[in-house]
Length: 557
Ligand SMILES: Cc1cc2nc3c(=O)[nH]c(=O)nc-3n(C[C@H](O)[C@H](O)[C@H](O)COP(=O)(O)OP(=O)(O)OC[C@H]3O[C@@H](n4cnc5c(N)ncnc54)[C@H](O)[C@@H]3O)c2cc1C
Image (cartoon, rainbow, N blue to C red; front, side, top):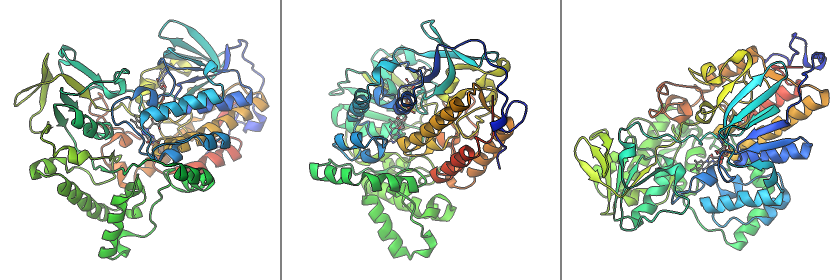
C-alpha cells in the first residue's frame, strides 16, 4: 500500500498545512509543454476547468508526432477509429476516417480539426522551445526559459513532450560531410522528397523504416537498406473505409471504446485467454494463420496470452513468423538476414508492414547487414562500409528515438535544492505513477516514463492520465493547495512495482526501447525501467486507488 497523502509535516492531506503561502504570483496557473495529442487534450480539459493555461510548443505547428514525421508511408498501426479522442460524441460523429490505419497527412488534418472545433489554437504558443525549467521553492513557482530568451512563470508545469520526440542519429563520423540530401525521418522535408530516379540509402530497420522502405522502393532507382538488427514485422492489412463502414463504426463507438478499456494495451485486440499448450497443434496453426491475415496488432496482442510470457510458446510462434518471412522473400540469403536471431516475436515493438518483405524481391533493393560489413563513415558522396563505398543521392536516417526519457533529458529541469532531473535519472528514471517525481513539486509528467499510458494505444492511455491530472488539479484548487509533490517513499514503491512488472512478460527481457536500450545514446546500453508493463487495467486501478485515498503518496500544502 502506498503511503497516505500528507502535508509537509507528515499529516494526512485533508489536514495539510495551508499556513505558508507563497508571496509571488506566477504569470500562469498552468503551462503545458508540447502540443501533440497529449498536450492538446490537457489544454482542453484545463480550459474547461477555468484554469489560466498556455501551451508552449517548440515547433512551428501543432500535432507533435503527426506534425513532424512526414516520411512516405507514415501511418497508424492503431486502428484509426480507436485512436481518435473519445471525449466528444460530436467530434466522433462528425469525423470520417478514410482508412483503417490513417496516413500521417490525414491524422494531422484530424488534429487541426480538433484545434479548430474547440477553439484551442489561441492558447498555443508555437516556436516556443523550452530549454530550462527551474523550481522556486519559496514561491512554489516554475520559471521556464525558452530558446529565444523569454521567461515564463507558472504554478503547475505539465509536460506533454512525447515519448518518441527526441530523434537520434547514428554515432557515425562524417554525417555533415555528405553533399546530397540527408535527413532523419522525424525531420523529413515538409515540401516532400522526390525519390524518383535517385540512389537512396536507408539506415535502420525499425518501425519507421519498415513503413518507408516499400514506398521508396517503388520510386527510387536504387534503394540500399543498411540493417543492424532486423525486427519481427507483421502485415498491417490496411484498407479504405467506405461510407457504410464508417457509419457502422460511428454507431459502435460506445462498444469500441468499452473494448479498448478492457484490454491491457488499450487496443481492440485483447489476449486470447487460452494457453498455447492447451490448444491442439492443428488448431493453433489455424488460429495463427487467421491472425496473420487479420489487420492490426491482433497478431501481437490478440495471440495466446503465453506467447509473450513463456519462452517455449514464444519460440513456437517465432518459428511460425520466421517461416512467413522465408516464404515471402525469394532470395534465401536475404530472407535469413531479415529473420531476427536475438529476440522472439513480440518481445520488442512489432513494426506493422505493407509489402515490406516483398520490397526485397525487387531488383533495385539491396540489403546490407552492417554486422558483416560495418559502416565506417558517411562520406561526401555516400556511405563507406568495411567492404566498399556506396554512392547515394539521398540518405535517410531511420534511426529512431531516444525514446521515453529523451525529451526530458533535452530540457534542463532543476528541482528542489537545485537538483537536476538529469542527475536524478542518470541511471534510469524513477517516478511516482509516471506522473510525478519526488523533489520536483508541481511538475506533472503526462505520458512520461513509467506511466501506463506509454505502453498503450496512445490516446486511450493519455485520456486516462490527463483526466486523472485534471481531477488532481481540481482537488488541489478546491482546497487551496499550491504545492504537490510525490513522497520519496511512494516513489520508491512505484519504482519497485514497475521493476516487478518487467518480470511479468518476455518484453521486459529483450533489448528495446521498452527496456530503455539505445546504442545510439551514450549510457543507454543497460536495462532501464522506462515503461509500466502491468497493463492499462492495473495502471487504472492504481490511479483510481491513489485518487480515492486523497491522493495517497503525495505531499501537499
Ligand atoms: C511514426 C510514428 C507512428 C506512431 N504510430 C502510433 C500509433 O499507431 N498508435 C499509437 O498509439 N501511437 C503511435 N505513435 C506514438 C505517438 O507518439 C503517440 O501516438 C502520440 O502522438 C504522442 O503524443 P504526445 O502528445 O504525447 O507526444 P508528441 O506527439 O511527440 O508531441 C510532443 C510535442 O512536444 C514538443 N516538445 C518536446 N519538447 C519540447 C520542448 N522542450 N519545448 C517545447 N516543445 C517541446 C514536440 O515538438 C512535440 O510537438 C507513433 C509514433 C511515431 C513516431
